[in-house]
Image (cartoon, rainbow, N blue to C red; front, side, top):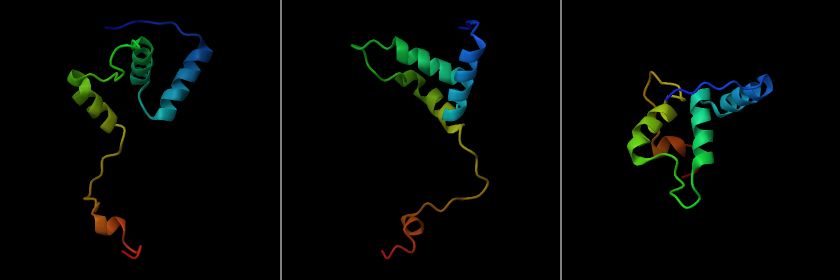
Length: 84
């Protein structure tokens, strides 16, 4: 569903700053804010339903840079030089 909302300039500025601070698209920030507001206190407090989890995970992972080389995340490399 698409909804057109006319926001005052100051509110729009704050909205853009908060979305940028969290590193997410403004659309996702608005969806999260609305979802949090609509969650019933007696209902499940998880705003990400099971059916939408894969979409949420793709959006979340898209915020991070893609690496073109393998990454050594082994225990040995993480704790190298710490006397273990």
